Image (cartoon, rainbow, N blue to C red; front, side, top):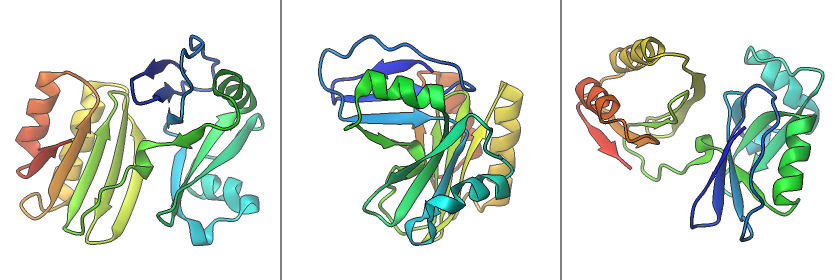
Length: 193
């Protein structure tokens, strides 16, 4: 994991395959920690049961490892995220931020409209995608190892949805202007957040 803090008392932590992380002791209380990992699921809260969380990961092709636990992240919007963390990761998070901090994930980012929308959050090595038409149709986190992976994924996404009908809302967490141009080329109705 690595951490970036900003002025709104929020920090993003990138989970990197179960390895420990170090974050300098925060100079101010952190209110929210955003967990960036491909081992995240979005589920309707009404269907969540703690005893079924591991089965949900297995059904999604991501079985929980022996040293992992599922962290449920609730919202007031009816959806919740399930994040797989190792015991060491959970202990490190607790030591760095305490037990009162709120956790979140890009999959819980509110989109706020009902028109056909593809919401994308690109963190360089992870791409979070949510599709609304008008309700949530799909939510996925995809790990990308190379620019070829990204190109393939985005091309398939652009081909699978009517890009003239869907607004694509992009949260690009990079200053990469070439990557932004690539998004603009693929998606006719692109809005940057």
